[in-house]
Image 1 (cartoon, rainbow, N blue to C red):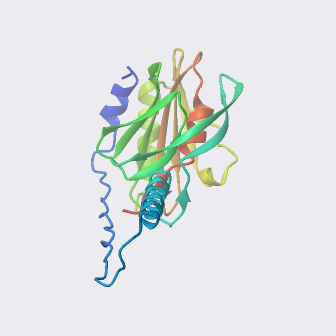
Image 2 (image 1 turned 135 degrees about the vertical axis):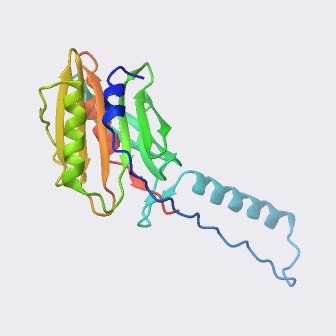
Length: 223
């Protein structure tokens, strides 16, 4: 996808697995033999109620902590320093079992087991890699390996700005450059939901703020 990905692949951690979770099954509805015959009016009402329930399920997603998410959410974000407002839509990723809100200009896809990519539709070399980490991750080792990955891209590795948001509390962030391209890594040290985000952007395509605004909506699924 991008020439910066190769050095990252060489130095990526090799023994990191995320345990999958089993799917919850809903019990089938049981109908008693004594149920009265429906009139046409009642049948129409039942069909309408059933359609409403289906539509509701399609427009909501329940997270691991039982949080119900609506289908869309308004976003305020920046691209190349310019502020924008747009509606993002809830997307579910079954590769790592999470949902997040994605703006129309971007697409979310699985890259490989335990790694996904959220990329700019018009230029897939501008993207964010998403890795949900195991709960028992050793952060010191992760920081060391992440810094080594960045050094392979460019030798001048420095601290990156961390958003003032609860999602990024206690986060670790470093970045480097290679010509016009910037690679920024964020380690989200959340006990319930540890995440690594790696952003690949360019001087003329700085989508870091947009990626982070979408990234902070990541929520693990309940299955």
